[in-house]
Image (cartoon, rainbow, N blue to C red):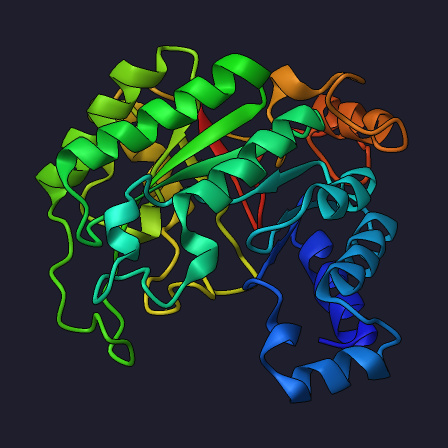
Length: 315
């Protein structure tokens, strides 16, 4: 996307009441794609990190808070992105080295090695960056390996206190991938994993399950222990899972009510992290004002449902 495309999308999002700009992309595509390197150069950038940093600045100019998940980043790269992001993220996916062996799902993906991913998550803690992570369910891991992944996340959080949200995400088979014929986890397997995550991470943890990936299981997941649905957009599709439509917010709200919860909007950084210790000094006043007012323009208003990157939470 060029600068004008980015700004136009951000303006349309803000007009719809959005508060978050989610920047989600793969690991350093300039390493393997010459055409992409040429596009970056035409925009005046030598790296994707520089490009995303400029996009985050544009988002802030347009009144939205950036949250970036662009694969594995170095400590220096995260430090560069911290002043222009309210939070960062990277899925751990799995703690299993076995999944990186020959013929397994992560064999051709060195950036998915658990040592590499855990290092970034730890360094984000050292930099005091509010961080979102999680595990992927159904890619060939054992149940014991899921537990090990959750324990690893808990251990990192106990040391740094920066894990603001843990996502329990179900694998969805894609027709144009080598795992097109793989089985997807069923409802019970997901609910079981959510319940175990709640037991391991404790009552104060924020646990999310994407609602568009399990449209028939919302009540089940609430009962299993989630307290967050993640971002829901009125503007864009879920580009990672374009086949999975966003849920209807009114219906989702009724489901939450039936389970004793109220659906409320939240920002891309959780309330407990809205302090100068966690948010860059250039952003803290804006974050606090947006949280207090519930609107991206700082005008007091009634709480609204979650929208584009306006992550939804349950209370």
